[in-house]
Length: 164
Image (cartoon, rainbow, N blue to C red; front, side, top):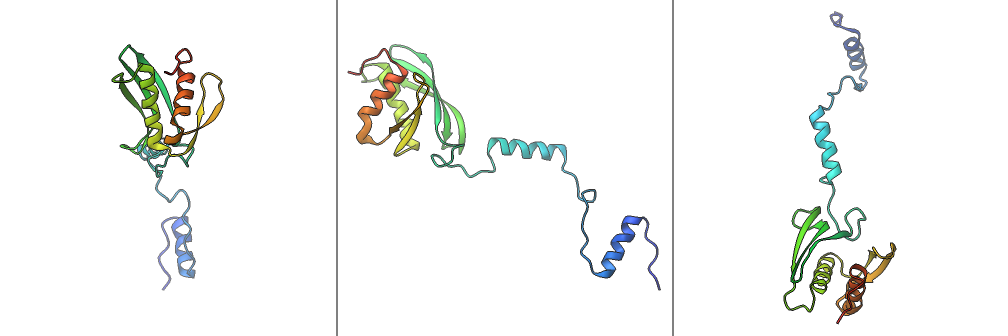
């Protein structure tokens, strides 16, 4: 006996293909559409980098950082570092408090704290984009090169200060 007639043309064509043993190809109309909320969540996750494995130094999207001094007093200062945060596994804005302590000047304390942040992520050469010249300068974060690194960053950020 022949099979009963299909309800519509699409189901009839699918039944004929199944009878011949062909794989059914699903058209875009048959696949469930992504909801607006799921689409938004997917786009936000991609923009935040939540679907990437975080790395620092080899991946240009997660390498480097930006320092912005917001408060400078005689014995304390604050600056923001926008860069890779190991605690959360992505780039973030971090507020850093600096105390003068035993340093001869608060500006030297700021530079030494910045160097410590750089060394947390980079163990060799890195590129410092100079605000003074607007060019990228290759510097070394190795402890053996500390004097030159400190002098360069101090002069670049605070050109009026002489290192003792």
